[in-house]
Length: 379
Image (tube, rainbow, N blue to C red; front, side):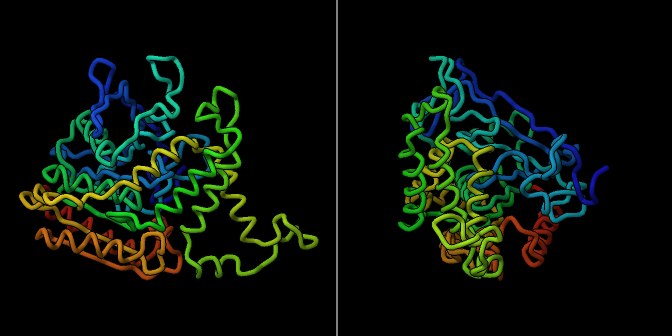
């Protein structure tokens, strides 16, 4: 039995998209193979293959965006958005969600065994570029027999991937929704990631990235990185509303432990993160974000000018990690390239995490945009 609006039980599939003999060529010129990709699909692909929507996940997301895995209690990370009758209605759309290259949830990444050495890649895994994510996911579409997407949708890092995809392969993306994202990180954003990576790499159990061979995990560093990241994901109003200055219920007297409710929340987020994410993937994927700057070339919009894409750019007014100004910058560049752009700044008290929440105005906007996309169809 499934809940109303749920896609029900789902299973993550693994596809081998590149091999040793036919490797992936990365943006930096290096090659990588074999490359496996984890993905899930929801809904039914139409006979004309004209209803496919690709979901691009954020930094610590994965392929499991909707429904339930057998035996699991928590649904996919975007389950409030994807399903029958939901804004991304799986009775009408065929939705594809895939784990990123460099990830740790079934797709080839630094923890994967390098067939050439018999050891995990570790820090020998090549540095990645946003374009590499797109290349791999385009190959997944070819594997699925889909030439063009009705739409691509992503939040945060996922929104960056959608932007990259639309700028470089506009003939494949009819509509592109970019939510709570950036086209160029500020020094402050790079600084947050730098501290997170330093916490991981300075952990005594990091062992130059060979921690798995030592039977350990850099738990303290990874937990600290996640705790700090969560501070940036919520607004001050959200922290005040959720926790205020409430003491932790088990505190007996002041000290240097967990004295406040907010400290307990951050500690919990850090600990549960250890069970599902790899430290090396955190290093590699966060670094891709630092270097992302697609509009820094004079010909950055040449391809999309020749083949326009319908863009939806959305921000949240209390998001200080990727503030509204980040989205306005994207809009400005797209407008200068004569692209059809719809921009919405959504009121929310929840900061950057708003893109994961079922906020009425946010979901209404996406529902209307997807409805229009389906009516207008592939160009």
